[in-house]
Image (cartoon, rainbow, N blue to C red; front, side, top):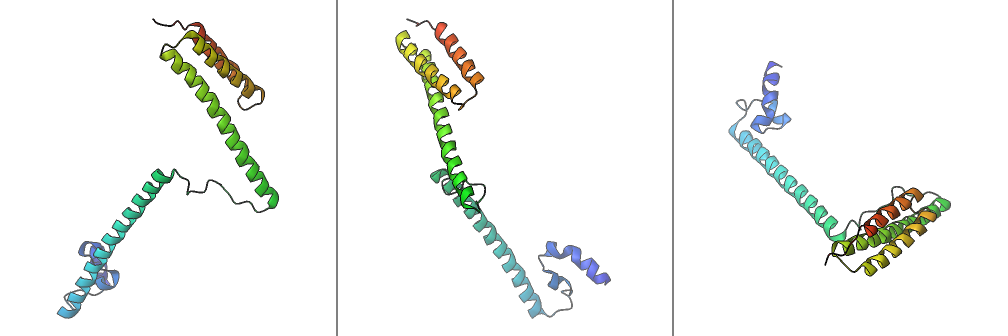
Length: 169
């Protein structure tokens, strides 16, 4: 038992398995020693190849994420069990897509106005962009795509931008 406690801490250092550590190498003949050392070498090689395979899988996964833009990952958080739940999931997906599209349109309109101001465009062109952005803000605020206070805040910011705009000649 004392020999066992002396040998077990050195198992990983010597590259031996637990079954090999139970018997001191000095007791065994040369053939068994050679076979066990070869087995330990094979275990190390196998571990190395396993590590490389894991790295390749991770690399492949990252490449797929970059190329396919997460399209192969299922976006649903759960699988519905009833027909009505399936329908609700379809409806919520459609509404979510619609909401995102509306907000994206608004962002594009606001950014176009800001870009026109930054590039010193004609004041009439900036006013046309302002009117379309304010119209979209009003519509989204009334239909609760965004909060009404946020819509009025954005309109106020855009109005201040327009009133402070003087075309640099």
